[in-house]
Length: 266
Image: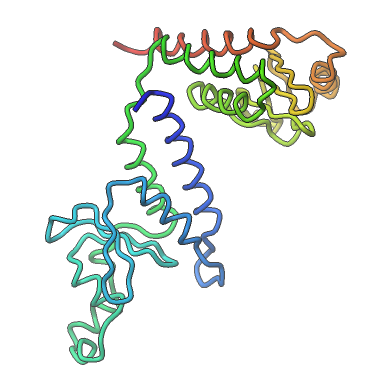
């Protein structure tokens, strides 16, 4: 797979993980973990599905007798044990419950459970990402720039946003926080917070879904600075000059990404 394909896959993995975690409720709550989304995440992993009794199990190593086993239910527990042991603990038969030893196993699984809920999701998320080759060079970035510029020229918003999301993933840019969100615009940039709880955003790139315009504001703007926030709005409405516009924004992002390659330890 190409770098772009792998990076898109990473973005999808992270999105699925966030969506699953958002459905997980606190202990003793009535909220149900979204198993369909979790199943989609597991399908991107190396885990193998196995139906055992009424359980949906996902095995890290299906050929091994003992392995990590995720149970696809509300708890999303990952066990390190045997399939038969998980079946006993999670879905025991009447005959199995007659044994006192088995009852202790059913009531206490701390000896075999590695993680549950959010921690389990993050484990699968990390293992999925570790499978991807995310190394890149200038030619990989050129592909993203070319696609972004072509989408901008064709007024294809989804393509522009995809290219921006790819660069945002590379550069660690965050979506625009609430104070910087503008209707019918997509924004990404460097996000930080001061001890005063002021949100600082920038440099930032902002794309207008209506006007198909792409602008760069190459400076930091604090959420408490109303004058500078007004400047951001004026840039997006073309009442103030941006630091870069259109295809030049993609070139700016490419150069920023290349610095990561050059500055990384050899």
